[in-house]
Length: 117
Ligand code: 5GP
Ligand code: ZN
Image 1 (cartoon, rainbow, N blue to C red):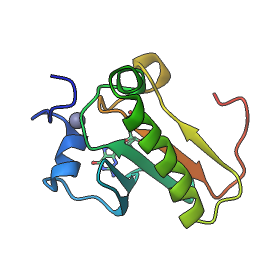
Image 2 (cartoon, rainbow, N blue to C red; image 1 turned 60 degrees about the horizontal axis):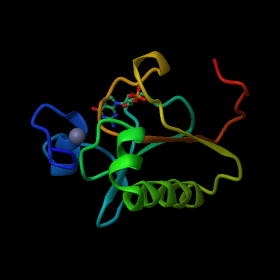
Image 3 (cartoon, rainbow, N blue to C red; image 1 turned 90 degrees about the horizontal axis):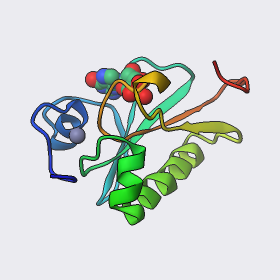
Image 4 (spheres, rainbow, N blue to C red; image 1 turned 45 degrees about the vertical axis):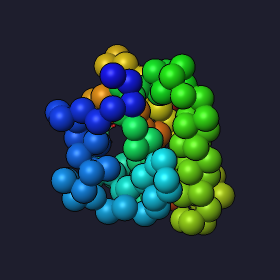
């Protein structure tokens, strides 16, 4: 069921504390932790604690929770004192999504090219 923890989901395991992660922020509804394979000096993933398979599913099922995630991306950027940064929701395998629990990448701390590859 949408929102329920999934046994086979890596990010649900991070929420449950079953897989270690470097957590930088936590709220009642979200967790932010450093990406294990950082692509920039700041590379943090912000996730809803509830399981939704991608950002589109999250926004459709629970817009308030999607807003919580977006608000936390800004809090992460503030904490790392980023003036410029990028927030990315890879949505679908063709866009590079590999973990099927909605997550925002917050990337910054270096120059970023646009458009991305
Ligand atoms: P996606 O490709 O789905 O948009 O992003 C998934 C991200 O999760 C990747 O950037 C990847 O490096 C990160 N990741 C995968 N496994 C782990 C893990 O066990 N711990 C952490 N902290 N990040 C992970
Ligand atoms: Zn999950």
